[in-house]
Image 1 (tube, rainbow, N blue to C red):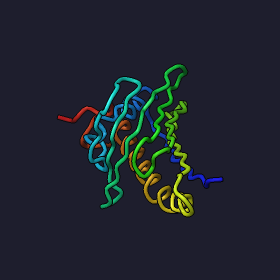
Image 2: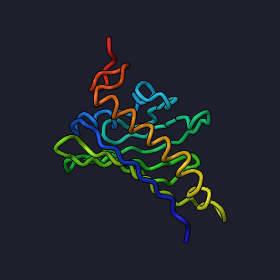
Image 3: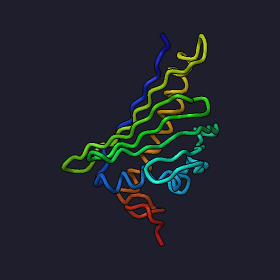
Image 4: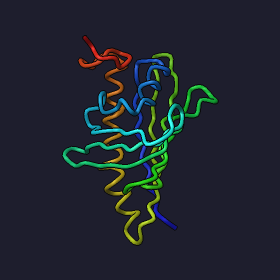
Length: 164
């Protein structure tokens, strides 16, 4: 049995679900609004199902992967899912979930990964990749989106449009 790596990042945002989902789903804009993202390239599809290549930085260390993004809108609030199809994290499943609250929204990103690498893969994923890369990048993503939707980011207004 392979060892599983799981991470969970949760942040409460003083904003409505629709505004948060709009920014979270628009991955092609992430390199503009998220300083730790180097690029996101649309490889195929569009709308609620797309294949993308994503590149970010964890500190000075560059990371890159490809994933399929699917947005499930059959319920409210929507769920944004990713399945990594290339890179060190190939096979990782990611889910962005949203819980509306009277004062805003709880936003949670869950990552679930069972690497197929022999012997030490699970330990490396659990002790290094999960906490040092996945959780760190997801945490920075949530904190930056939170600052934007709460109108505390000097670069963008609350819906992600650049300030003039």
